[in-house]
Image (cartoon, rainbow, N blue to C red; front, side):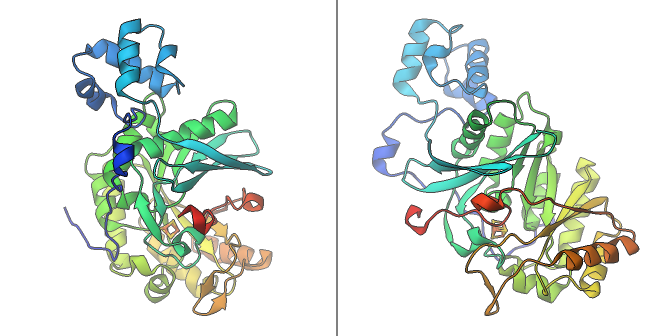
Length: 362
Ligand code: SF4
């Protein structure tokens, strides 16, 4: 593998405190093949029935009416269905933000986004806080607590599904944290969530963790990939995303070529636009050059205000409409199609880059 070291390292999910470990472990984040071994000697066909109940979001083992009662009682003694609880909900125009309490008292956030056609997207977190420290992101500004285990990731989906009152159309790993710094647990979560849910509707968003992109390309379930490229000018990128300064844009592009060669999916480049910082014609030219040769869609995201964030001592600001329109024209003049991401969730601080609970949740 052409592994390239980023500035930030993978971090395993924290061990839960001893009193938590003594509790019944949750089954929500266990992929089917692991569950078959874990629940032996229960026959594989029964374990599949249990898995399907879990995947449908059953709230109790006693709902599993096609499982013999004695087996349900034994399961209930040894295992839990879930490990997290919904701690609060903020509802806005086109989004709902769920605050979720983990067993060790940490609170994370996940967001349900609803588009104009009524499609519902679950935006899930993979870490509590984030070690990458992008200057435009509230989560990065909070620091890093720990990575989530697969149950904590999967259960966000169930909490959001319950809030949505219906089916979820898409899953994006774009909440708190950098998914590719928690690859093993992310993979287990994807294996669970993709059961009966098309991989084409699951997107992993990364700041550009090179080793992780190569791993995605090498035999992972073929999820879609979105990459944050707030600047394709190396120096500016390093200043905006200090956690990514350990690799170059050339190395990132080589990894994206490999992913695309293996997975055949178009890649989304996410460009957050910061007023007066990264919206010049030169910035657009660098982005167009970076995108050249790749099959990409560029998403332009006018920065969502998140109080207190500074860039080299100056407060960040959202770009004006004309600034955004000009940047888009610069790109399109260079043959790059760009879509403007409609703001969703800003009223509840649930938009891109705004996730982060109060410091006492950490
Ligand atoms: S933008 Fe993503 S990678 Fe960067 S600090 Fe925020 S959560 Fe972490």
